[in-house]
Amino acid sequence: MIVILRSDATEAQIQHIVNRATKLGLKSNISRGVERTVIGFIGPEDALRVIPLEVFPGVEQVMQVLAPYRLVSREFKKQDTVIKLPYHTAVGGKKIVVMAGPCSVEGYDSLLSIAKKVKGLGATILRGGAFKPRTSPYDFQGLGEEGLQILQRVGKEVGICTISEVMDTRQVELVARYVDILQIGARNVQNFSLLKEVGTSKKPVMLKRGMSATIKEWLMSAEYLLANGNFEVMLCERGIRTFETATRNTLDINAVAVARRLSHLPVIVDPSHGTGSWEYVAAGARAGVAAGCDGLMIEVHENPEEALSDGAQSLMPDKFEELMTVCKRIAQAVGREV
Ligand code: PEP
Ligand code: MN
Image 1 (tube, helix red, strand yellow):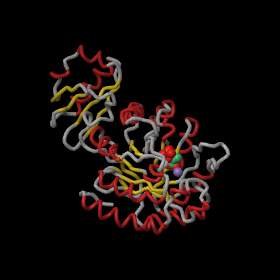
Image 2 (cartoon, helix red, strand yellow):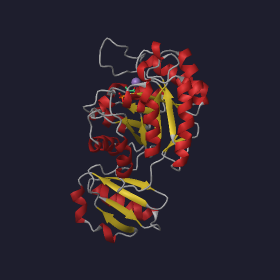
Image 3 (cartoon, helix red, strand yellow):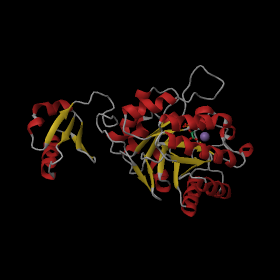
Image 4 (cartoon, protein in one colour):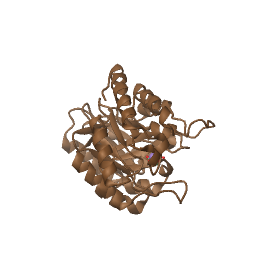
C-alpha cells in the first residue's frame, strides 16, 4: 500500500503517518519527488487497513499497489530514478551513460591504458571484473582483491567511476570498499541471500537479468534490494537463453521498453554478453539506445586475442569509437544524449 501526500503536506503530518505505521509493525519508505511525496509501507499491510489513512491530514490518496514488485514499480514512483555518482555522472537522466572496459581486470598497465581510451571516447564508468563467474573452474577466475585495488587506483587516476561484480555475500563489504557500483551478475539474479546483503549496502547496484529470468522475476529480485533499503538500483538486460544458437544469448530489446514502463529504475543494455560476438555488439547497442535504455555496458579490450575472458565479444577501441559516434546520433533522434 502507498500513500500519496498532498503537495502542501507538512513534515509533522508525514511523521504522524510514519509513526502510526511503525506502531503497527510496518516500515515506511518516504520518496520525495519533484511533484509529490509518496510513502510506501513494507511489512504486514493488512494491519494498515484498520486505520483510515484517507482521513489523515496531508493525505491525498491511498493506493493499493497491484504489482508484486511494489517499490520497483511505476505505480509506486512515477518519475524516473536518477542515481548520482562521482565525477558528475548520473544514471537515469537525459544522458545515456556508457560503461566500458575489459571483461576482467588483467593488470594495472592494461587497465590504465584502456580506461584513458574509453574515457576519452565518452565512457563515464569503467568496468572490470575481479571476481569472475566462470562456467569452468579451470578458467581465469579474476584477480580478486588485487583486481579491485587496480580498478580503484585506475579509476582515481583517470577520473572515472568504477563498477565490478560481487559474487558472494562474504565479498559485499570488500567490493563496496573499492568500487562506485556493485554489479550482481546474471547467474546471481536469484541469489536471495546476496540480494539481501547488497540491499543493506549503501552502494549503487546494477542488477543483471538472469539468462532464464522472466522480466517479472528480474523485477522481483530488484525488489529485494529496495525492500532492504537500497534504492539506488539499475537494471541491466544482458541477453537471455532461447533456442537460437547463432549468438551466445538473445538480447531482449523488448525488455528495455517493458522494464521502463513497469519500473522507475534505470535500464542498462549489455550487448556484449547479449550477443557474445564483437560483430553484433554495435547492432545491439544501437538498438538499445533506440529502444530507450539509460545506459550501455560494452566490453572493450586493446588486444582481444589475449584477453583472459570474453575476448570474442570485446570491441577494439577503434570499433568502440565508431559505436560512440553512431550512438550519439541515435540518442539525439530519440531525445537523449550520449
Ligand atoms: C560480466 O559482466 O562480465 C558478466 C559476467 O556478466 P553476466 O553476469 O551478464 O554474464
Ligand atoms: Mn564478460
